[in-house]
View 1 (cartoon, rainbow, N blue to C red):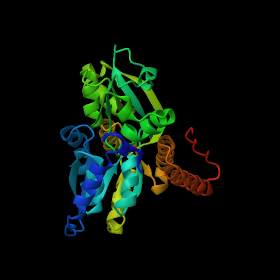
View 2 (view 1 turned 120 degrees about the horizontal axis):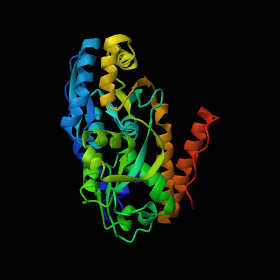
View 3 (view 1 turned 135 degrees about the vertical axis):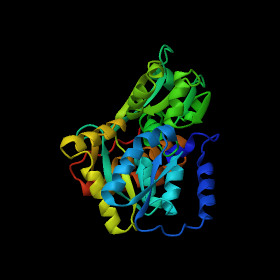
View 4 (view 1 turned 30 degrees about the vertical axis):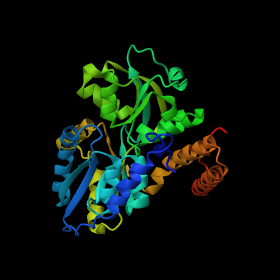
Length: 344
């Protein structure tokens, strides 16, 4: 069971809501194939659609010019919608956060085409917990629970908004957020930021890229927020495509991203300025193995949750899944360090 599923429905799971969405989606017929020169590109409106369109449309315009394709933007309000849209071929390419990209590879006939760079050759960012400045709330206060605080968590399929806080904060301390806080509300990064800044939430999840975005777009509100916890580095977002996309179209898209912002002179400067608005520095090649650290986080969180439940069958299944994954990854890269095992 995905650890993100446990947060909203008392006493344990809100996976029912996601399952309902998936079942409803199963009744939808797949749309007719699009013209080969038309590609629907999905983007999560992690902030709001207007803000996302403002920073992504120039890139889409450049993509159309460079590839000769017609690019149709598709802005979704949650990660599940992104996965379902690609699953039913309503979109063929998309910008996915790591956990939702993993879900797309599992359920939407998708594969990773490239990864996003945020600083030089780095493609990492971090999850954070934020509070209102002056509240006096510390991480130790959060870990004491006591149903004292109103907590804002991310989308169930958000890497930084949900999985990382579970894997690195709550599961290692044996904490079930629904039992820890006065209220737990799932929302976008932007909604959680505004909730904390305006005193509607005591604590919320977010990420370092989002915090840079808010500091630029809402500097006065950003001054009211402080970070009380920062995660280890997480894989940044990736460009995901359907496996059955025309190979020639797929290659045009791949080459566009790998070359974007790399040209010398005025045109390259303009492209780099567009990337800066997105808090990116460029793109690099990647495949599905880019998501292996997320698989490790997920398996560790699942194992920690199973141990917390005390259910022997769940513990055995989660332990086997965890061990199998470690063996698989060790075989692929013997030099890589093993994942930390959740405390018993």
